[in-house]
Length: 235
View 1: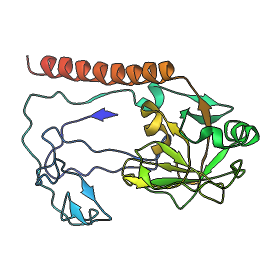
View 2: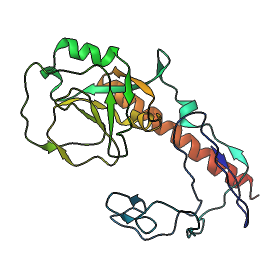
View 3: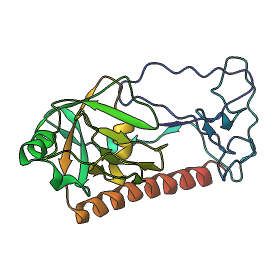
View 4: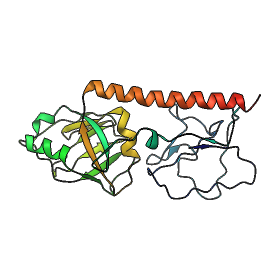
C-alpha cells in the first residue's frame, strides 16, 4: 500500500499483482457520486449506484471530493496480505465455524472438507465462490425451505461442490449450510485468485472473535500512522 500526492497529468499504472488478486485506489476526499442505499459503490448486476451503474471505461472522468484533512504523501503501509499471513501446507487458510446442517453430513464428508484442497472455479464472483474438490455428501437427501443467509455461509448443493456466499450474497437460499467463513477471513478468500486453491480450517467462536479483533487492531494502527504522517507533513 502506498500513499502519494497525485498531480494533474500524471498517469497511474497498475502491474500484475504479486500477492492477492484485487487492488484498491482510494482518494482522500472519496468519489463524489450520489449515494444509493447509503453507499457510493456500484451494483453491476442491478446496474445502479456508483458511476452510471456500470464498470469504469476508458475515458471516464470521475469526480473526486475534497479531502477533509491534510494528508502526507510518499510513504507506504504494509498490506493486510503481508501483515496478517495465514497459510496451511503452502495454501491460503480460511477459518470457518460449523453451520446449522454441518452434522447432516457424514464424518467422512466433514473430514474431507478440512483435509482437502479446494479450487476456486471460474463460476465465482462477488455473489458467491463455487469451489471444486471431493464432493461433500449428506447422510441422506435434505429438503430445506429457503431461509436467510449472510456473507460467509458455505452451502452445499446436491452435487456436493460447496458455494461460499461472498460480499454481495443473495438474502436467502435453500441449500444445506455446511459451515461459515468467519468475518475476519472473508477478505482472504476474496483476495485468492480465480483458479487458485485454498484450505479450510475449523476454529472456535472465541478464535473467530480474536481474529476479528486482530483485524480491527491492524486497521486502527494504519489510521494512527496516517494521522501521524499527516501532522508531520504539515508542520
